Image (cartoon, rainbow, N blue to C red; front, side, top):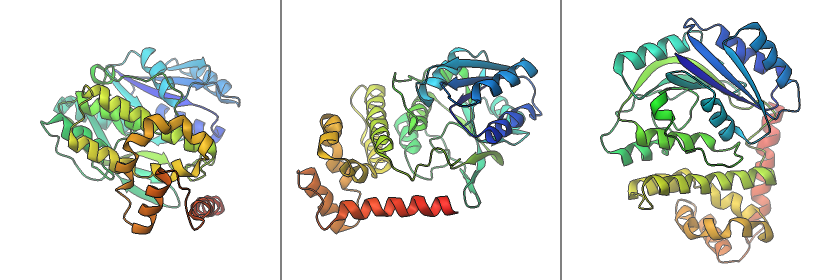
Length: 329
């Protein structure tokens, strides 16, 4: 009845086992869990084989590393359920997650349902805490998915989605491990006519397992973050036949307003990789900077003048401080 897709790449063994045990603990038992080992180099493969041998509802798949987005595509292609759920490999379900989400989606006949959840960081805090009234105008729903702190959020993991909706998602053939959720959820929103909300904490998300810290912006992560934004932009253009409504554009620019900073942290040579695709709408992103001084610096950098007053180093040092503080905590 429900297929749970679990893309996995080099996670801590204890977190992976917690995740899989939370699936086993579900009070709703008519499920299958598609475990995709995305080219892991640690003990992931052995662990998922162990669970598949222990319970036939677990299906273990081993593939070469292609990123979270394509791992989810593989999971979908190998699943049979009428409904699709996603879970990150270091997260956990409330034991009643499937039961209550299934009850809501069958009661309301919504195209997808979402629940309140908790994020594990320095402390627990609730996320996705409000209901959102779905609009009859699909562009409003797509824009909502790109709006920070919106009711449903643009994440896949606190959702239960009808298969006939999720199958309409186009999975770009790119290796993405950052920003893959919005790429899927804007498409789910585009194809959905209704949604429903479960106002209980049924999902527990681990913000940072220590292996993939978003605050630690290495060159590779900067490039992947920018690439994810470019892919998201192409997805929006394809959905709306290259005529993206203004409300969606505005939400997209607001959603991606961090891009100018990380883009200009790259050296000039590396920037050329993104120049053709990113720079046409870079001025729109810069508009969302509230500080006049920083906005001027960004505009100058966009004209080829490097950040004055050591701003580049200041940004790098800020990122490093945040990463170090997070590791200490």
